[in-house]
Image (cartoon, rainbow, N blue to C red; front, side, top):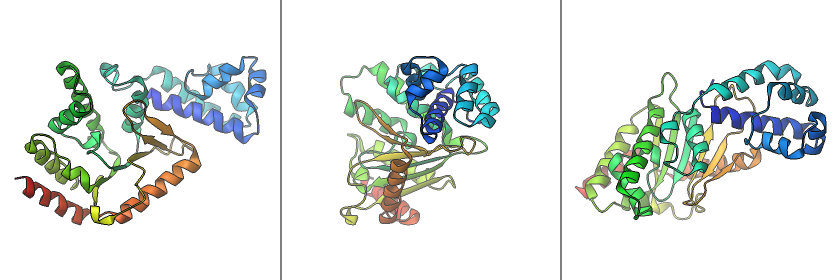
Length: 286
């Protein structure tokens, strides 16, 4: 089972909402059964609060899922007792990014299309510092260093044993051309991508400019898939922006985004061709 209490809290909220909706019940009806305010039900379904054990038993019986009570009680205990890995870095990134940090570390599959820069999960320290500084030039040196440390700490998931996530990354070719002020930083980054691409659990593809208009024209996206013990979880789509990341776990929308990524991968160079393009770009810069 995933050790992230944030991921478990999200799953409990997601399942409680899904079970209620599947029974055709309104939040007002659930609140009446719990003898609580409607806002309390809303908080349980939006991750703000975890249910008490007694509430959980009442809800599962009300939703016709009493047989799942032991499973949910175990999830509840784990969610209350766990500690997220990034706790020492809390406050380094905006609070809304905490959920992504938890999900990334717990995912079994991480798929992305990146249109502007190499994704943080695959960045070198020098490239990461250049990217962060470009977006926030007024950031204090100590804060910049802290953010780079967090970005590198995220990459421990790539070496997770015995089950590292399958990482499938499609880079727009323009990412290779968008170099930091020091070209050596880009060379180091590209070499890192080549090395990572040799791992069985990492797939790096380049979407060539010659592909023209493609399925990813609306911008970059990341799709996360979770362990099978989180049964029924559709996964999450994450859309990044500087002010507030967007999370989508509507099953139909997640499927649509997965299809978009599949079409982008089809338009991209295959892994061997992509490696050749990365190596060619390294030669151009050296």
